[in-house]
Length: 93
Image 1: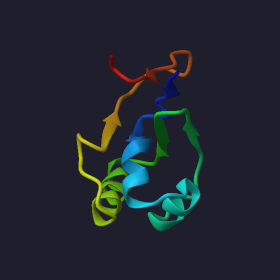
Image 2 (image 1 turned 45 degrees about the vertical axis):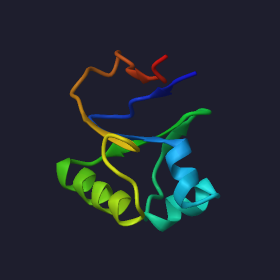
Image 3 (image 1 turned 135 degrees about the horizontal axis):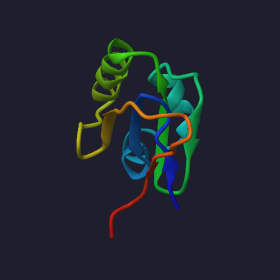
Image 4 (image 1 turned 120 degrees about the vertical axis):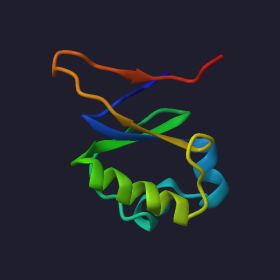
């Protein structure tokens, strides 16, 4: 399975990492103050589109505040691409 990389600024979070800090994913999203659109599959939450680098940095700080670590638990993506191109994130084998 895979999730879309949503917009120019997006954060992809591993669900197994979310489970370590909060059993309920909706509660986790509220805890970090995220109320916008997201996509999910069995492995990931894709948060975005975020509106600019400052917004992405704010959510990166919030993820750290709840105990998640960059690279191990989530990754920030700042990618410019045309609307006709859909980028996906999937678990590496």
